[in-house]
Length: 178
Image (cartoon, rainbow, N blue to C red):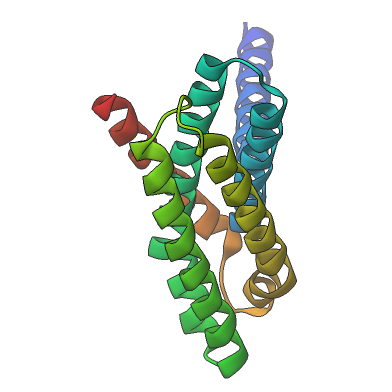
């Protein structure tokens, strides 16, 4: 009987260990989470470009706008302010100010796209320009802001958890609206 109890304890302990490792591997640090968001949106732009039907384009455009809105919100609320605070230098301020301006420009274009539809003759052009804009922004983040984050005294794992939690809240809000 003692042998069965010991075996059962080892099995439970092993299962807990596996679950803990699974949770740790499922959690992403801040930079991995943001990079995954970038990849998702870039894939959506490719999908939009290869789509031919207006209803497909509309659905993909809606998804792009939602993804970008949520992504920019978590960057503006959590990521950028903490990088700015931890870096505290002119180069960091310049890079983050540029990112804020790029976000503002993207938000204006997103608002135009959301107010339009796939039947509008400018719709495809708006998505194309947004795509180019976002590709530039992502390249700038990788070149300047991500290295700042790596150098800063920030727990990127913990920040990743907060970014993910806020992202989930925003996704739920989006789903309730639609």
